[in-house]
Image 1: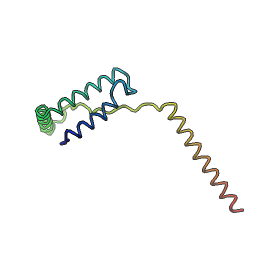
Image 2 (image 1 turned 120 degrees about the vertical axis):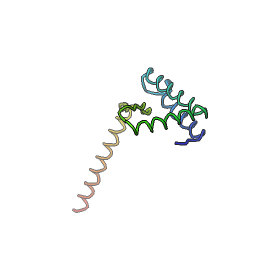
Image 3 (image 1 turned 90 degrees about the vertical axis):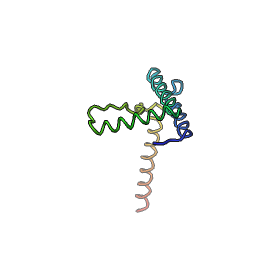
Image 4 (image 1 turned 180 degrees about the vertical axis):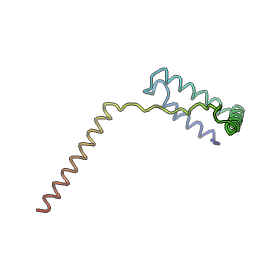
Amino acid sequence: MEASQDELRASFRSLSKRFHPDTTELPAAEASERFRALQDAMAVLSDPEQRRKYDSSLNDLFIDSSKDSSEVSIQQTIIPERRALSGGELFALLLLGGALVFSLLIGLTLAFLGRS
C-alpha cells in the first residue's frame, strides 16, 4: 500500500493515542511494548530509504511465500484485545434495555386499549 506521509502521520497519531502507556487501559508492560513497536514502524516508514528496503523485503517475502508458505512467518498486525465493559458501560446497556422493554410495554398497552 502506498500511503502518503500525511496519512502515515495521521495513522501514527491515532494509534499512539490508543497505545501510549499514559492513555491506554492496557497493562503498562504491554502498552510500552506496543507503543515501542509503533514508534519503530513509524521510524522505518517515514524514512524513504528505510521504507524502500522494507517494501523490498516484503516483496521478497511474498515471492518466497508463494514457493513454500509453511516456512513463512509474518508478525501479526497490532490489534488490540477486546477489553471487558466498564461498570458505566454495563449500566448504560441496562438502561437502554430497560427503555426498550418499557417502550414495548407502552406500545402493547396502547394497542390493546385502542382495540377496546
